Length: 130
Image: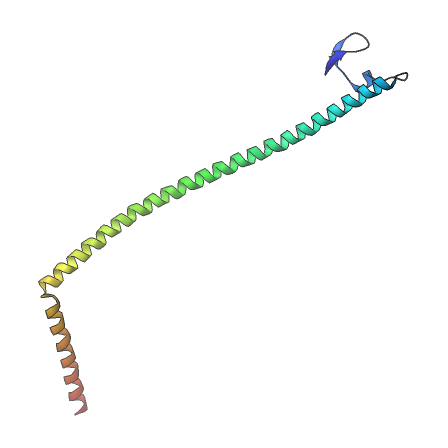
């Protein structure tokens, strides 16, 4: 607060500018009001400082979250690319396997081979036990 002091100079007012030994109740009231206003301003400044620090922390935290999300999105894109490549390879191998089964005679030849293996196993058992 600016005002005129007792000497007629402009400048900041202090509490002792309003109080003297022969002051009446009006000056005490003014002094109390000035003191209360200064206390309230100090409390508001402290509150704003705390709010500013909290906002700074939240800003730093949000930047960290943003960076983390960016890295995870990048990893997901790479994983999606790898999955697409692997799916293409698996489709290729499946197709080649089907072609090989068709060329080898299909299921009929497979059943014949299994039957011959069973017969061979039975013959080996008969030879060993006789």
